[in-house]
Image (cartoon, rainbow, N blue to C red; front, side, top):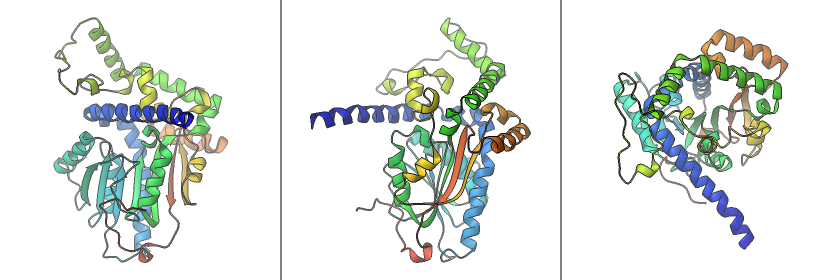
Length: 350
């Protein structure tokens, strides 16, 4: 018993540390997240539009009564990028549940929808929630969408089990742009993409300006046009990472390992194997698509034609070995017409 407890305790401590670092970082990064990831969002938009069109096509094909609205969950929604893309395509009569670990993210999403509403869009419902313990009833959701977030979770298997629980039979699960273990096991591809990313980072004007600003702060200087920053004293000081706008480059390696526990690490230990993830689901899901992308890393996203050409050519030479992978899969079972109407709220008991 002591041996088992000793093994479990460090795992629980690390999981708690991962949650705290992610909650603090993503809460502090809300103000600059979209700006820092504008190229990534531009590259990812097409996948989420394809997911929305697939869901609508299946609905028009007769998957259930037309009068019943679709329920879509944007899980670990962040600033709401995937949810807004889906919302613009899905239209009215859809309930969009934006869920995230931080209250700050939910406020960001609500403010966006308030100040820049989606015409004839879905009804938005936002709530803070842990992806491994969703406040949703069994078989109550038509689509679970998660964009570039699973690698932040301390226990991905628990998250996948929750997704399976809340999806109705025949429901769709879209997992977008997760780090691909096959890429990191390929030494040549890993070195190429990492080298290009590093080169682009050193040539980027925004990054250079940030590096100069950090150097000025370390020397006790204040850059022109920037007010001196103070960290307020108070009970929440220990939970702050620091800085008005926090990006990953501001964090030490030890914190980065907690922020992205499944996206970093030496050599082949980084990333997920999509097929192993699928095998870990409680039942065999039907694969609609598994797509590998970004063979040249983030640098190629600055030039969309180059990114598309590189993915096409290198994908033919090294299938499934891009930096990132995305999937769209379907839960087995009868369609909505064979599934009893389940409430959204609450958590069903076994």
